[in-house]
Image (cartoon, each protein chain N blue to C red):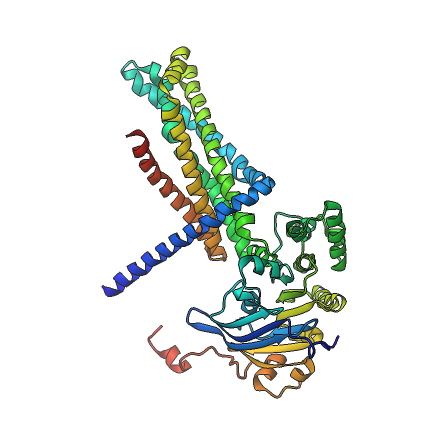
Length: 258
Length: 275
């Protein structure tokens, strides 16, 4: 019994230690932002690999999620004769919740895991040590540009997701199911509030961007530098990011819309 | 081979005193004292697992010792502020076992990297310097290749060109000969010696490749169990009467380093019920 408690205590201490190390990493990541101001090219390169290369999966997913929303929404709303509210329903669902949350989850799976694997392999192949010995701080030179690229990318990807989702909803609702065009777009325009819905959605996606990228970078930087260590770190990135996004979504929604 | 004739007059470039360092409960170094003379080629030898790479990381202040001091050019590296440590590292080069080339950059950009990071030279000047460094390692023609297109030996030569890009006062070589074919090994052996002689760069070679290392070293330290077992010129070590050094230099399977890992008696272990 005592051994069980000791083991639980050991796990707890390990988790807290890792959490502490993750927070300590935040300071150099933020300080590395000054380097980016001097050399914006570092950020631009990472925006491409972190953001641009994630566009395809976001676009396809957004389109299909919007189409499903249009389909499901139509069948429910038509029971009450409320098909004209389909545009509002699709847009509100996407802008408030599904856009930021699903984008963050997809980002963690596509870009987050890639960031962890890249940084972990750089550690395993001594590239990070090599930078240190060349008097170059890898936290500023390698980690910080990726961190800020993630923060910039996620809100833009979420906006793209929501936009294509609305288009998908319209394709199904207006194109296939015959919802009135004016009702669809006017309902959306009238019902969506800029501050209440759009700004809050953007705030959510910025928070998710910070958290997902921070987790991905920390897991890569802190991993055991072996094949197995990198593999485990990559898995942890997806699991921790997904749980953090879902948990934070509840907290943020409660704060914003309650 | 050059004589380390300045060593008597000048203080050593690297002075290690009473170094103690442990991983977990195991002491890797337990009171290590080493002097690396300026301008010479010093080899640090010992079997795998004796902490040779760890020692280089302690000299480069990538690791902190539990006790003792490491001085490089008169400065205690573990007492330096981060900016001062980075200034010192700009005068130190290190060749990692894997080469540690940045995989998303070409050979040219890898060698240009420290110049772009630490100097304000224009691209034209950087190009000239990079080509000269690559010429020194015989890979000027490979400047446009990516690291994934290089053999192991070529990758280490590129890493060597990068290590000398800023004309450092010393270079640390971490197992430079491991896993090399005879031709690549011969090239690396010659390069390391030639660079040392031509630029009077202090070289520290960590290796367990006896013949190659003894062939180029001016001074050799043999370490085991966290301490220096013996030191001297290659000739002195080759004639050493010490059991440990003799076993290591001649590659004898048994001796002070036993063939068998410690284990209970064979009969009881094989016939007993326990796993």
